[in-house]
Image 1 (cartoon, rainbow, N blue to C red):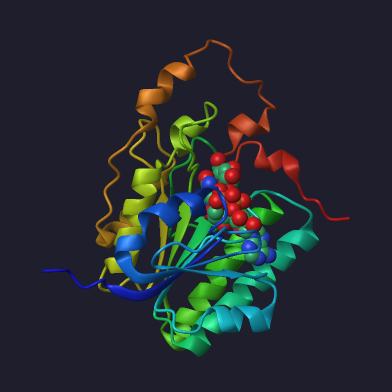
Image 2: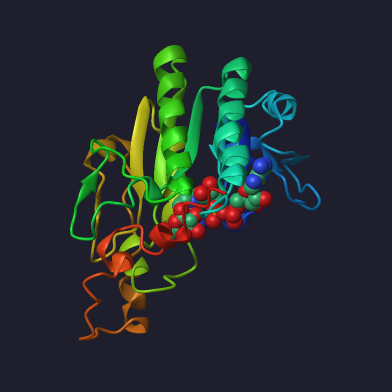
Length: 270
Ligand code: NAI
Ligand code: 15L
């Protein structure tokens, strides 16, 4: 007996990006059709795929993009610090267009790829949970706070459910010592998205996307109902960044604040 596919159509934005490529391979069992979208080329549609190339800042295109969609994984946009105009275009106008389209199309649930940089100005000696005020470390972080607020508004106003997943560092492996704390394996990312999409109710939730690393800055107690349990850890990569007696200089802000080098990159407001 073939099992019914839970969703009819899931939209994945940012499908040509680093995480989008991973998700393209992994989320197929969750829907009859995966609609993949990006500004960049996505190649040829495979079985069970639809491809729509468009700019998130193009309102008419985003309205059309949403037709027939049940749920959205919103991974499109600028993913690092950048000049404000670019951030405004992709991450602020882009997310506003996305939610207006979600509302018009009657989509019930969104997972918004937020970022740890929404709280990057907390110290590396702090433990942060979702009830604490945002402290963005960059214009990029500010744009993620905007997405979190906008999705809260669309939930309060229209009941559209969103999980804002503040992703740590999701790469094949940690790339520096900081990522021993922020690492989020691809398997854990996919499992957390499954929990976000299939939990019966999520309301408006902020969760941290992080593996079960030995050191931690984020407490997911407010998102425990999602049922996500990280299975991976950065521990297996710790040997790449051996202990050292070289303490960072007292004025080294990249070691003092959770956001690391993002604090040095902005604001790029000319
Ligand atoms: P990425 O930069 O590889 O992918 C982003 C994709 O969005 C790109 O394919 C790009 O073409 C597309 N895009 C940019 N502007 C667009 C626009 N105006 N219209 C349509 N598409 C546009 O980033 P990555 O690493 O795949 O991240 C995906 C999402 O997850 C991003 O929103 C990022 O902020 C978030 N995130 C990722 C983390 C990570 O560790 N990889 C950590 C925290 C958040
Ligand atoms: C992010 O938000 C970025 O999208 C990603 O490229 C990494 O820089 C990550 O944060 C991080 O903090 O390591």
